[in-house]
Amino acid sequence: MESFFFNITDTRYKVTELFEEGEMHMRRVDISNGVVFFDVVLDADAHREFQIKNLDRMIMITVVKKGTLQIDDQIAQKSHLPKEGAISIYGSSRQKLIFTMGGSGRSEVFILFIADFFLKRYLSSKRDEPIDFLYNMIQDELSLELVDTQPIDALSLYIIDKIVDARSNMKSIRCEHSVIEFLIHKLSFCDMIDEGLDDEERSISKRAKDVLLKNFVHPPTIHELAHLCATNESKLKKVFKKVYKSTIYNYIQRLRLEEANLLLKEQTLSIGEISKRVGYKHQGHFSKLFFTTYGVYPKDLLKR
Image (cartoon, rainbow, N blue to C red; front, side, top):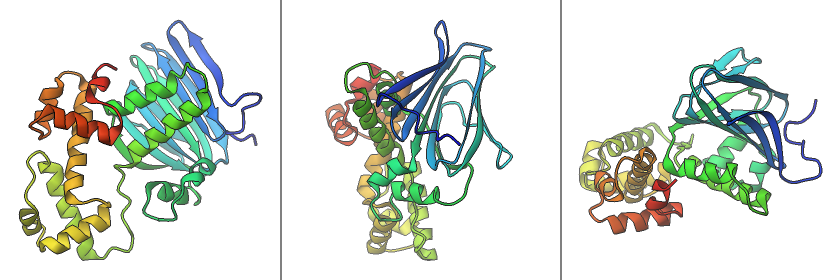
């Protein structure tokens, strides 16, 4: 059976046009050995599908910008319907999949496939690291399993544009760099909970996270948060750092910036309005913090 990832012949970057008609297209791009993406744009009522049938262990990330995507897992006899406006992460150790797009309005879909041997380069030997978690997960026997779903954000679209529209020289290495940037961004919000946590630690960390998710613009003090979690400040900080690999302060900043990232995607508010909406009084401070975290200024995402 031919491997999904070993199809590059005389070049490290290979584009295969599977369908092209006017502005519509469905293309496969082999960035390098172990990294492949499909870029699909279909007009209203157009309908296309492709199949994957092999034994490659991989993770798959679907980005449904517009329209519909259906994934039929013929091994598990199960269908997956990634939501419009969402980024979904899947793991798979063997595939017999049919991908169907279009049929009800314009469809814009990006699907990224990354082989386990590519992930292996970046293992940390820590089971709660996202890359390690995903790599170990796909060493088991599973046809297709959903790991996480997140709303599409402005930075993700910015990076995907860099992956899809690589027109300069050194395409393979530039695209591979952008794929790694995309992975870092999306996996940073996947909580890989340590299985060694006791019940009390799980309870404290979950309560704290739930409170912060609802109140990150005007968060409670550590003392107030500890009271809400029925614990003391010292234990709260220790447990939170153990579970989420972050201080409470840094976690709040992360939530604020990710909300800003989502607001930037809508392109309806100014930088100043977004800054205030997520809890920052000064636009300059917000922009600097955003750049330090994501490597791009908010204004650049608004220009996208």
